[in-house]
Structures are given as structure tokens and as C-alpha cells.
Amino acid sequence: MSAEKRNALGRGLSALLNDSVSVLPDKNDYSQGTDVTSMGSVNEIKISEIEVNPFQPRTDFDHDALAELSDSIKVQGLIQPITVRRVNAHKYQLISGERRLRASKLAGLTQIPAYVRTANDQQMLEMALIENIQRENLNAIEVALSFQRMIDECSLKQEELGERVSKNRSTVTNYLRLLRLPPAIQASIRDGQISMGHAKALITIDDSSKQLYIHKQIIQQGLSVRKVEEMVRDLQRRSVKKEGKQPEPLSFQVQKIQDDLASKFSTQVKLKVSSQGKGTIEIPFLSEDDLGRILEMLDW
Image (cartoon, rainbow, N blue to C red; front, side, top):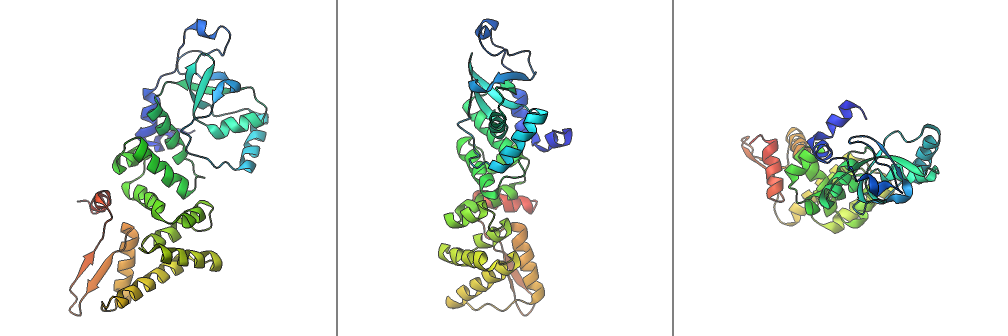
């Protein structure tokens, strides 16, 4: 991993790794087992002595990609060591690198290079989650679930979570909002049937049955994000009309401004403009955290 990539991880992962130290057990503990050498070095650990991390947030591993990595390992060996913690003299628990461990098993390796560290359960969960969040091939739902687990199980606020994973608060909020969508829509995001842009448009609809209706249209007709945004706006206009509130139609220019603001703040912004050119901007928020996110974007 390049220095630039390591820096991109932010202080969250680096701080955890730097604060953890390599385990230096008594030499007698290893008279019949794996030899763990000096602090900070890469150690060869028996694969049979490594148990899978119970806090692993990733459950979906692409078999073709694993086979490809396994073939590479057979030829080149494993370039990037996994990270484990020592449980006892002949047992280790995986902190990060399950994909590499699985591929190494497929390649027929009996030993694997590893960093041996100390970490409590919360550190293990946080380190595993952070490592997985940094992967480019994670789907949006996996990222959202990892964010939610860090908030719930590591007692982090959204701002602290953003610092850990080097993402701004609005990005974190956008991912978390995906988990409010019906399970069928979340599954479509996970499976790549609809994009994050589609999902952001659907989130602005309050009625789950209407979300599911438009979701079905996206799948059946292959609708673009722009088309879905138009459908959502039309749906919201009809909803307002039924309530007997007939707002003045917005000009194309004002409508464009409203849409741009809605996209910027990831929420349903409303502009009201009178014939005299006066008006208001309404930016709704869903929680105190969401309000804080919006205020932060306004540099309040």
C-alpha cells in the first residue's frame, strides 16, 4: 500500500494500528508452535491456528475474485500480510484480511504472513470495519451497515465516525439513510440493480409503498437517475395538490436552483417565490445529527 493510500485512511485506522503493539510472548510458549519474532516484523503464522474474526462485517465474497487472487498467490505468494491478534500459544484471531486468508487456503498454503497485534473486542471490530470500508469494491449497503455498526457497537457519533474513515459527515449521513429504505430496495442496491443516485431520489419519498412502486419501474424499465428524480418531483406535486395546497408553479430557473440545493444537502429542499420575487428556502432535517450536518455545510 502506498504512502498516499495509507494517508487516505485518516487518523482512525493508523491511530489504532500505531497504538496496538506486536505481541512478544515468552519463548517457552512457542517451543512447539509458531515462532513470533521481533516487534513490528511480519510473522509466518500457521493457517490452521487462525480463527475467523467474529466481527467481520463483510459476508459476501466473490468466488471468481477469490480464485483469481488464489492463482496470484500460488505464483507470487501473498504480498500484503493479514493482521491477527494472539489468543494463546497456538491460536490467533483474524483482525483484518479474511479475503486474503480465504484465497491463501484455496492456494494450498499452510502458513501465511501476518502482523500480530493486541486489540480488545471493540478495537477489533473498529479495525475490521475501517479496513473493509476503505475497499473500493464494497457495495453501498455494506458500507452503510458498517457505518451503522461502528455507531452502535463502538459508541461513535457521526462526526467521530467521519473522522475515523476520512469521509465528511454528509457522506456518512447519505449512506446511513439507505438503511431506512425497504429491504427490497436495499437488496437492489446491494446487487447493483440500482445506483446510489436512484436510492437518494427514493429516500425523499415518505411513503414506502410509493418507494417500492418507483423502484419496480426502475428495474423493469431501466430508468435513469434523472428520470427517477422527475417522477419523484411529479409524485410530490400531486401529493401537495391532493392536500389542497396549490403552490405557485416554479420557473425553470428556480426549479433548477431547488433541485441543485436538494442534491447538495441530500434532502428535499423547497423554494417558495412570490410574484414580487420574495420567498423562502425550506431545508428539512431528520434528526439533531442531520441538522448538525446541514449547519456544518452552511459553515455555521
